[in-house]
Amino acid sequence: MKLCRFNGGRLGLVEGEQVTDVSAALQALPSQRYPFPTHDVFIAHLNELRPGILEAARAGQKHAASAVHYDPPVANPGKIIGAPINYKAHAQESAQDSNIGHGRAITTIGDWGMFLKAGTSLIGVSDEIVLRFSERRNDHEVELAVVIGKTCRQVKAADAMPYVAGYGLSLDMTLRGPEFQCFRKSIDSYAVLGPWLVTADEVPDPGQLDLWLQVNGQTRQQANTRDLIFDVPRLIEFASSFYTLQPGDVIMTGTPEGVGPVVPGDWIEAGVQGLGSLAMRVASQYA
Image (cartoon, rainbow, N blue to C red; front, side, top):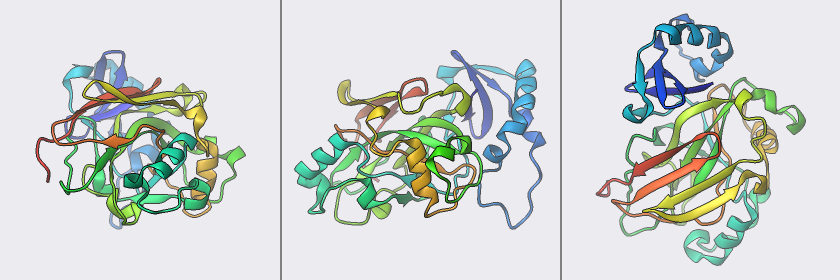
């Protein structure tokens, strides 16, 4: 299934060039009372909701996929987890470009660990990226995103894949500078996710996906997830050795070489094989 949130929180089933409103299926979600869960309730119940989604699609209103406003496909991720320096060629370019490294020793993700991005940084692909700090460099980073479907902790890589709900396309927008990554990557609108969630059963091998990014029609990034240093199972093992992973948590798996600056008014296009593409405007003014 390809599932999106659109037009202010409606649930959509994406088929070809059409989005069918299947929001009626959400009525089957259990009612919640305070204190509310710290995970995404829809993702937690996704498998149970599948029959209801297909039933709702029979009578649901149809929309052209190009005509809806895409919200982030995960409404309430408890954690957005980043994977720095997870492609060898990106590690090399980071070591060679002082505007990226800022004097830090550039090694690999195994030395750096992972980091968290604030939930308030999350936007959908129909929104605009609003840059901050005009005197500093703001970079694009295209990445495969993994959405966790079940609670897990200290899971081994060999056992990790059943905990995946699905995959999406993400941009880990980055303010360059000396601060910790979790600070300068958590700016509002600096975590892009979408356009939809592709359920895990439709992605037999997340380690063999092409990904690309263009700015104003010029190709900047082009790679394949086979080049990841820590692949998806290893990332889940690594993250869950530190954090309890919960339904709706998003792991941004790292960006390949070719990162570069964007400025207000730029047009970003990006895609991940089989998962969709985006075309987004960088807002015309700094925040």
